Length: 233
Image (cartoon, rainbow, N blue to C red; front, top):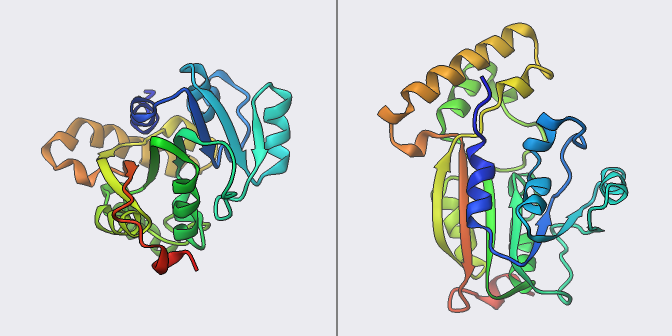
């Protein structure tokens, strides 16, 4: 059973072009197979017809992308240059929860958006059923060990507003992929994950969408919310 990647589809639906900056564009592994490419956000953005500049700090995977014909640049998401090209959309999927200073990241994004530009973020939902069950099973090792923080709908809205953004759209989706987990986990964990995933997809309609495992946000610049004295010393 291959499940539709709702996170990817939501990002593609919210993105507007023609020019897109994709921060954190490298996967943990550069895609090699058709299945891996089908779940690679950067490739999907390019295939959708957008002119996409990929940015990351992983020089080796960026080299592989450049050799495959993708436009890439080295850029630290917490030190986005103030001056430079403006973008219609900035996409950052599963990135903000890895940063030491998400405020600097958001301010940098705001400065590089074109008028009426939009920021598209995705981040794990700490109150999703998957996260709760993972915590019950594995305690403090239930999640990605590289995460530095968690955002729910309230806190992501708060930090966006403090950095000069207005939340235009926020939704909860599922990002489940047991066929990929199979390559990274024990057989027992894979079958447990797959069993839960299939049961969850059949029964999730009985619960509010806020229990799904990923938050997707479309944020628009709102200068009335920006407070330079707060962040931009």
